[in-house]
Length: 250
Image (cartoon, rainbow, N blue to C red; front, side):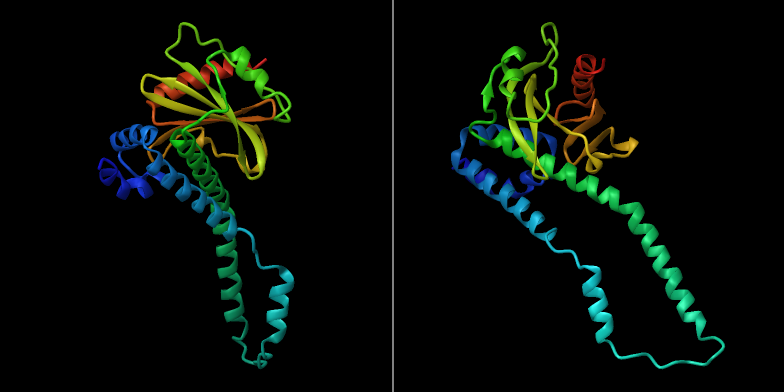
């Protein structure tokens, strides 16, 4: 069975850890295999459920204070060097706080990119990747009216190597956004459009980058965040990005 060749690679595909050629071959297999597609969707949904569950509980200040009150009191020391351990601990806490403050945005951005990669993979693996199927921008854009708290413009693609396949409403952090699917040759690029917010304050180095096997480009304009993701050549991702910039910026 053809599925036997791919079933052991579904988990790696869901994490975007396969080589580019195998990612494309796997995507082709998924388009014609309902069994493997269902398995992939289940794995992606499980990943997102685990990630959400891990963020549900954060220890509060009250909890820390209750734990500290339950600890036995420390014996007072009259040694002239008694302040040295406290100074060392304070310095350690300051170093840890500095590292956490510096790395926290990076980790948050990494999680955002991972969630978007899950959406991209799950969408392309779905039997119905888009809810509005059309290559006409005048059909796709009006479809989103009333479904999103914002609007956006789409470029004219005549004379370009890109084709608009359609779009759907996607959710990131419970916020609705547009996910548009563009095709170039045998590659598909997801264009995510969300209202810009602090979670999307990417560093300059993330404006054009490679995440796992996907090339990514992102920028913000008029309070909207645009994120381009796909396994197409980075120059093609950038060309599509520039087409949307041209119709977005005043």
